[in-house]
Amino acid sequence: MRKLERLLSKLGAGFINKMWRFGAGARLFGLTLISSGESFRRFRLTVREVYFTGVLSLIIILVSAFFVGMVLALQGYHTLQRYGSSEAIGVLVALALVRELGPVVTALLFAGRAGTAITAEIGLMKATEQLSAMEMMAVSPISRVIAPRFWAGVIAMPVLATLFTMMGILGGYMVAVPLIGVDAGAFWSQMQANVDWEYDILNGVFKSVVFGIACTMIALFEGYDAPPTAEGVSRATTRTVVTSSLAVLALDFMLTAFMLG
Image 1 (cartoon, rainbow, N blue to C red):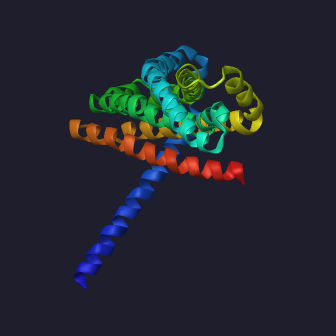
Image 2: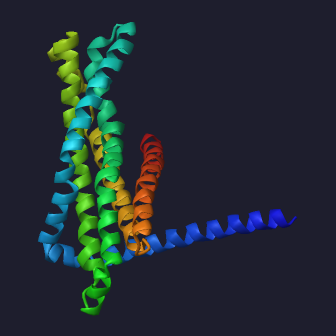
């Protein structure tokens, strides 16, 4: 009986802690939106963070996209060939990248590269009492540190997802046309005829914006809430990757169900 009580007590404490963290994250999100005026009045702060979160992530995004597109073309060709539809390989590659793989894989790579950097940076600023020093000088850390990084992530994610999709299509083309021998005209014409601007492209952009908000906000909260120790910052960085990945996959399912519904 006592073991059961201890187990229920432990589960209850864990649930309360998770709900408290969720509420604290929602509160930080609201304060970030309220304090966003500084990010637009001094837009150079946001531009600088766009460089650190977006531009410095280009290499891993583009290289990953190229190989993802190549693998899609190889796998899709061998599947479509069985049904005599190998000319539709361009449609398969484009729709897979525009609807799903572009936003999702970009968000996962963004969380692993830029999200961890944001968490570690803010955690170290907290550990070295830079945030406390800002408060002592009547400078809001949320408007000066959190908000510019938040909007930088929201701006960078759709751009990175678009570049990922473009590079993935290029990788699929390099495999399908020169290597396999699919007709180049059929590759591009069927893609243009079957990819819809509103249903496919705009939905993919909307997904990337939602993923950008989620990944960036999780990284900011984990860094802002991290204990001011080396161990606390390292654990917060790990939580950023895990939580962001799970959030992206869960949001992808919900958004896909909503869009298809």
